[in-house]
Every structure is written in structure tokens, then in C-alpha cells.
Image 1 (cartoon, rainbow, N blue to C red):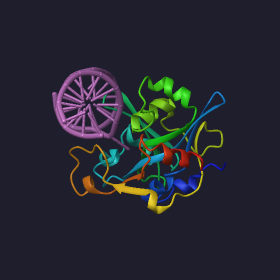
Image 2 (cartoon, rainbow, N blue to C red; image 1 turned 45 degrees about the horizontal axis):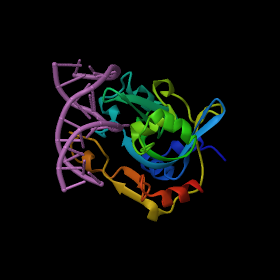
Image 3 (cartoon, chains in turn yellow, red, brown; image 1 turned 180 degrees about the horizontal axis):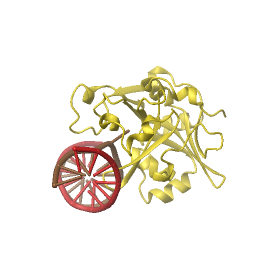
Image 4 (tube, chains in turn blue, yellow, green; image 1 turned 135 degrees about the vertical axis):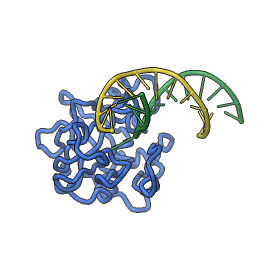
Length: 204
DNA sequence: GGCCCGATACTCT
DNA sequence: GAGTATCGGGCCC
């Protein structure tokens, strides 16, 4: 299965976000694959976007967002959670796609162990990162390096009728127009309850 | 299913 | 010192 190349990520963030839906995120741990179909993402685009961390410009934290597309931006929030983003656009332009949910398809036992008793394995950004075992050690990792143990496999495009767009989640005090920008993309019916759709996606 | 709330520590001012 | 791109438990339907 071909890995998505840097040219995929080095495009407008909204395009990358939309097209990441239905592709397969893979992490290899000691030869074992953890994987899931990307089910929900959000776009954060440039210093103008007041919901984007890069609104404050270059800092130690945001520096990775200015790196070439295809790098991982992993940051810590709410005192206990790691969130996984993929850098997009041209080198020097700070933008990224936040991974908000996957449909776990491989390595589920390992994910379950990491997630504890919860049935909600990967239906949130911090849950997904925890299930995959992604934390600060992966900040700055390059998905497009052939030796990378984290990468995305190209499956096939999902039909437009499967995609829902909504405003981004959890933006709190972010002012308009950024608060209402419909920059959240998700697969309809990919929620925890829709096992039928989930298994259809897993079979892609 | 939903709402409310507390936990918790890192980043930047 | 304030704010935070969240989660899970408790509670109530």
C-alpha cells in the first residue's frame, strides 16, 4: 500500500484535510502495526487564523508548524492530553491538520490496553493519540521519511456524500469569523455506534 | 443518550 | 498568572 508523499501534504490545508478522510494512519511498534481509518480532522491555517496556535507567530511550541509539510506537530493540552497534527502547505507557512478521530482497524488489543476500560478507543483527538502511543517524542517526526514508523497509507477517496463539514470543536473564546469557519471534516456515521459503516470502511 | 464539572501541567504574557 | 484544538465520572433522564 503506497504511503502518502510530501506532495500530498504540501497543498492547501482544507484540501489535505478533506482528502485525509478515509485514508489509513499507521504506526509500527516493534514490527506490529497499529492502524485506523481517519474519520475526523480539522484544519488550522496560518497566523491569521485566530484558532491556530501559530496566531502568536513563531515560538518554541509552534516552530514545527513552519516546517515542511508531512511533519508531525504533537502538543500537550489541558494538563494531560497529547494531540496529533500533520503539518501542511509550503515550508515557512504555519498550518496543520488536527487528527480528531480514527476507526481502529489493526493493533486493537494494544490500543485497548492503553485506553483502559473505556469502549471509546479512538473517537477523540486525545484518545486517538493515547491509543496510538503518540506523545511529545513524535513532535517533529516526518511522515514522509521512508524509514518513518508513522505514516499514512493511501486507500481510495471517499465519496463526497460521506463527508460532513462543521465548525471546529472546542475553540472557546476564539472570535469570528474563525469560530464559525466550517473547517472540521468528518465521515458521516463514523461514530462509535455505527459499526456497519466502520466495518465497511475497514474493508476498503 | 445528554449536561456539568474537576483534573492537570504546559505555553506564553 | 491565565488560558487551554479534552476526557471521564457522576448524575439525570
